[in-house]
Image (cartoon, rainbow, N blue to C red; front, top):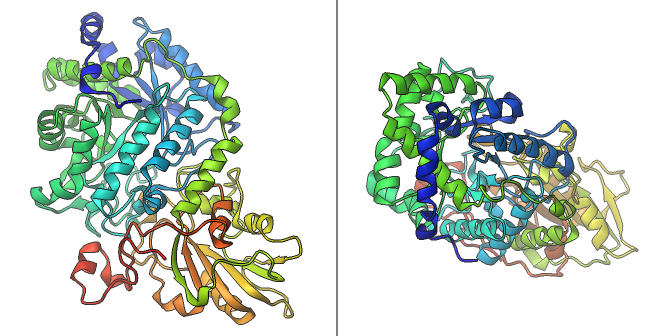
Amino acid sequence: MQTMTHTSIFAHEARIDALVDQMTLAEKIGQMTQAEKNSITPADVITYSIGSVLSGGGGNPPENNPQEWAAMVRAYLEAGQQTRLAIPLIYGVDGVHGHNNVQGAVVFPHNIGLGAANDADLVERIGEVAAREMLATHVRWTFAPAVSVPHDIRWGRTYEGFSEDTDVVIPLALAFARGLEKGQRVLHSYKHFVADGGTTWGTTRTYPWEDGGNWQAATGGFKIDQGNTMLDEAALRQVHLRPYVEAVKAGALNIMVSFSSWNGLKMHEHRYLLTDVLKGEYGFPGFLVSDWKGIDQIAASHYDCVVRSINAGMDMVMVPYDFKRFISTLTEAVQKGDIPMTRIDDAVRRILRVKFALGLFDTPFGDETLLSEVGSPAHRALAREAVRQAAVLLKNEGETLPLSKSVPSILVAGSAADDVGMQCGGWTISWQGGSKADGVMPLGTSVLEAVRQTVAPGTAVHFNASADFATDVTAEIGIAVIGEAPYAEGFGDNAHPSLTAYDIAVLTKLRERCSKVVAVLVSGRPLVITNELPLIDALVAAWWFGSEALGVTDVVFGDYPFTGKLPHSWPRAIDQVPLANLKASSDAPLWPFGYGL
């Protein structure tokens, strides 16, 4: 399927004009409103002519399975069909590595792993499978792909970007979008506009008028997420704006605006970049959506937040809790003349243009016949392929790898060895993701299970997470599956990304019992591990790779060669972070960008 051209995007302008002429102010403002499903009922959708409902990370039905998801979303879509003008509602999710909120869906590697694989065809096929699993539950919009260009691995969203290199990011993001477009289209949302990956450590602000307990309001622990990007415009354009230029050329219909600021001005009120550059200079024809409560960071007054963001060019606002307050505030601002009616009509036209382009007026629902495909063997096989392509071999002393499947015994240990939730990372079942101990247990295969399925029948596999084996238990090979516990957004901001004391102890204990130690690093970013390297014979960066650990054993045991290359420079020490420090350092990185044995 060819990417939609701007010509076809504008194919329904006469129908849009006719609709806008019929719409009341209330109906127009309803279209500009996106509420979270826990804060709105299907009846409210009818009353307020709501344009979109979303599930935030973890916004699941009480019984989390594909069938209940389909029923939940369908109820909101049916309500949209009962509004006066039957303008279809579009339902959105954070499907950032598969339909990852749904128990039973396939969970793919996060973007950092796909950046290591650097295979646009693979990423396009992943987009296609993700779209089919979303369509099964009537979801027609995912807030992905991130086209962030992360330049500081301390950032808690590093893993959401494909690479530190813009030239790696662009083709992979466009490939994911093409996959989502195949067949019955799923709307993709390029995010976060702009330079969310270029913020400076220590510049995140908290807002006294914001409830810090609210989901996604910055807290004192946020140090770089939602912070300030300090760059001149030439650098902004060269590094961070280029993905959006290419996205618009490829037919982008939706872009999500960043929490962050550029040189001190919040993106949610940045008229120059939102309207003059993106819509004017680049000719973006679709609509802009705010991030979760993002407009509320502009000012203490909600009225000022609404006026400044809408006038800057925001078209749809992810409210997400108190949608009635937003609607009444926007109505008041229009009636007072603080927001011109032309701005409202432009926003509504853009939203309707996208809904027509997606075919929602003809086919407002998804396709429940696809429910049998959710989590299917074919989809899991693709995820397994992605895992093995994403794995990067960083060290292999004495040709430790590939391992023989018929060694007498193997010791397996580490915090992530038998934990599918941990290997999937953030944005999995719940917003922050979680481990088995947290009750986050996506359907999939752990590394321990994969090892057991891979080795010969006569090989003894001994497992103890903390490597506290009985005194007489030794082995030629020890496998340590170690890394980061899941996190999302600013909760992952970390001044010193490194191994935990627990995992260092695991390496030390295995070193004492095994001739060779293989470390599989499960993380959302490079970690500073220089001091631990002497404990390790072979090191594999597997990233947060998702639900299919057989992709790890595919390469560790030699059924497939390692092909992954680092999408980020790997710092030798924390003083080489951020990337600008590494480039200025007299010492080489531990491993350079693009490295992989």
